[in-house]
Image 1: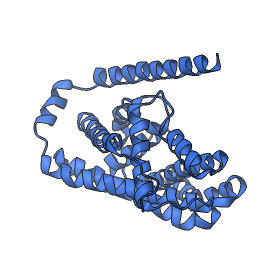
Image 2: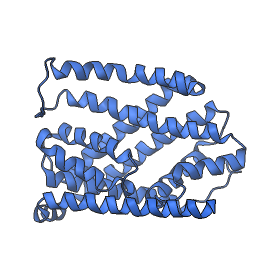
Image 3: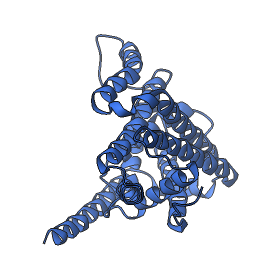
Length: 293
């Protein structure tokens, strides 16, 4: 009975994500000029997408290294080769099997079964891995807001640049306090792990720059990257399939404030998803041998 309920819940979750993805894409394509989007896709400079793919892969390697640091904190020592394989498999599960066990859940299952590492510790490592990535995104988002000329929909008694600067300075101290209270076992790797987080997100910003170059963008790079970071936060929420629709909605509704072209922004977002899907798909072709070095 419990198994039946679990299966039904997974199916309902997948169905809901499909509906939300479809609805989000409907809103996006309702607001943009699809003819303009089509013209943009026909003028893509494809050579720029090769370094975009390479820097995206590099960003995932950096974040995989971060996760392995957390594994070491709980006494789980696996090779970087095995860790990267598990990371790619997790990416595949997260993107292509959204209603199932999920990439993190599958890795936890495999590692618990093979090494008897407590599930609670593995869950904490996976959760902290995601939080670490989110913290890096928030920090870079706050930093990029400062030089970008934004049209804000509100007035503030205190210059907003000061508020943003203070918030940026507090991001990592606040994360350290939270980690000390909730994930104390992982504190020894705080500096290194956050270093890999920053490296991963900076690599994604470089990837975004290459994608923008492929679309013929010659100005406002920081504004596009700012909205890209904001869309990355929204895409983390498990509301749509692989963040599709959610990212595009952010670009469409943020273009007025950031001064970016909404059709180019949507084209950028779709290309980034295709790169993500292509790299994630490699996870379906990987076999795991726990005895390999």
